Length: 271
Image (cartoon, rainbow, N blue to C red; front, side, top):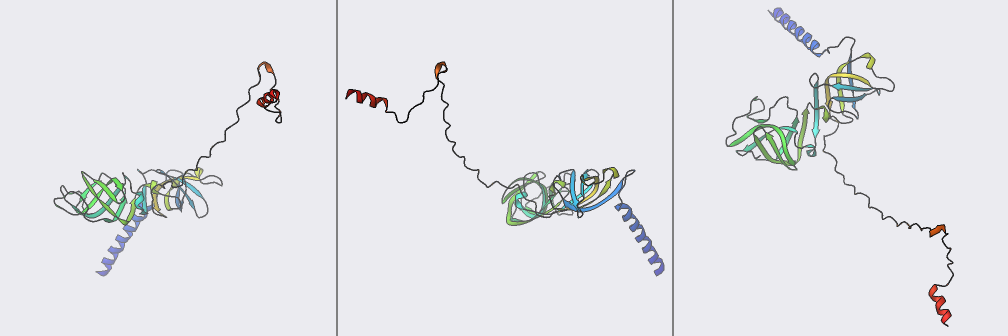
């Protein structure tokens, strides 16, 4: 009995192991080579393109199509990063008008796969509640409508949830938005490339990513405000006016600085 049971368990393990191996393999196009790289995110990274440099200095420009690739970005964010349009989710207690009863301590930035904004009974529910009644504790998912620290308004479906954040809220990032990646973040990439487009001494390799994982090296932050004052304008010295030439092409007479003024000559004649 035990041998039969152990054999069955071993068979299941082999099947699962085979499935995981096949699942992890990259589907290579004809002539393509598999790419598995770990490196630091470089400048030029944006939505759809990841630039990374590995430990040996090799640079890769990875094309990431969200329709065919799996992207995961994790880390933290500063409150200054919150702005209208960012999707967030949290568990909080609200009243019947959607006002938060306590300041928010924990918040998570995420990337919705579908239109899932709404107020849910719990994070395990797939559909939002039809009514919040007199209020209570709910799982809230939506886009930031307005944010002016510490006041926040979240459009959660047809309901707007309003309230305040604490002075130092813990904001997690668990998203699929590649544009969140910053320089020096840790990147793990799986994909493929054409050998003709491999990296060279003075050129990066070009590849297609199928699985991309980003670990933020520092919290996401808002745009830096310009605090430096503009340098004061220095008054320009007046330029001397050009001397007009005498009519008829005559030369401008030379003035003797020691000659007496015209008025003084008349006074001497009267004497």
